[in-house]
Length: 344
Image (spheres, rainbow, N blue to C red):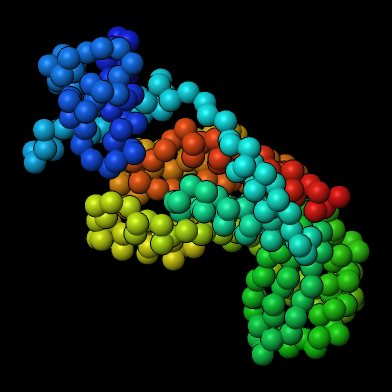
């Protein structure tokens, strides 16, 4: 739908109506709206303006109420043209900076703290999405022997994030053999991206010297540890907040919770929602995923060591957009700062 061109009066009515609806969750009538506007307008004039906004698809009129509510298009107009920027309160900024400071110096702890803080401050579902380790450079690998034929690969990327991956091998390897393989990989391939490591190992397998090098043969058997799964590392917190929203549709909530439980599907959805850089807002029907069409998502992407991370909030379309956008953007920047401090 083309973006309508509203005059000042209509824009003010729409903005005030959305702010009132976000605060109360109820349809907003002309009588109550007349008391909120900066300019003096009669209830009759406001009703006419609201009727015009409804014709433009920006408002809807519940049949059980004399008031009106914003549509997804109304929220979109508000976000794009009326919202403005809102600073993060000093108290929240201090809590974020303090809360992101990890006690154990772990990047994973930074991300877990961030998603918990964002969920608490916005009273919505919060997530942090780190890229698949295959898209980053690996720093260190360890192999742990499990009951044959499984081996646990513990991969640490250049950001310090840890990925655990269980692989299967044909030959049963002792723990000292696995340690020798890990030492070889750490000494010769640290700093490379995982696809590069895997490709180099496959090349070595085909070279004649691989036939005579017992260690290299064993290392080659573990090369599947360096095949990315495309999922990445997602942390979600605050799903219970969705149940506290007014007029909860339990069928939609069940579908939404199922999405949260399916990691691969959730990562795919979140990756599609994240922009290359900066803030992105998806509202209601703008989601490609049907289960999310009753929600809004505010996300921010930020690069660290050439790999993109994402942080965001998912909640009702009746969201405090200005506040949530400011918090998501601030937390994203603070995560980047905290991760650099951890790795320093």
